[in-house]
Length: 110
Image 1 (spheres, rainbow, N blue to C red):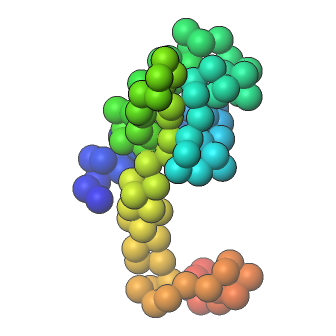
Image 2: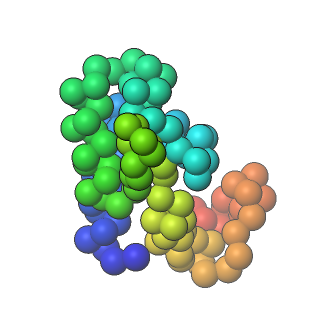
């Protein structure tokens, strides 16, 4: 992932409603959710939701598809995994990382 893409994605997620929408879509999995269900679950008006979905879509974090009269939104797991990979690329000095409880925190402080 390129640095500019990472900045765009992190910027899109740096807002409470968009982060909530993205996390909801991650939980929903590849099947995604209709916009009306997202608005209902998150508790924001459809007009506000449209703006947030546009920002997440522009960042590549979500994808949409038409199913009948509904637009279904889903997390773009390839982009999500690319973002996570970018953020952790040099974690633990380039060595495979273990859970935080297994990291040598004293060595990380040095």
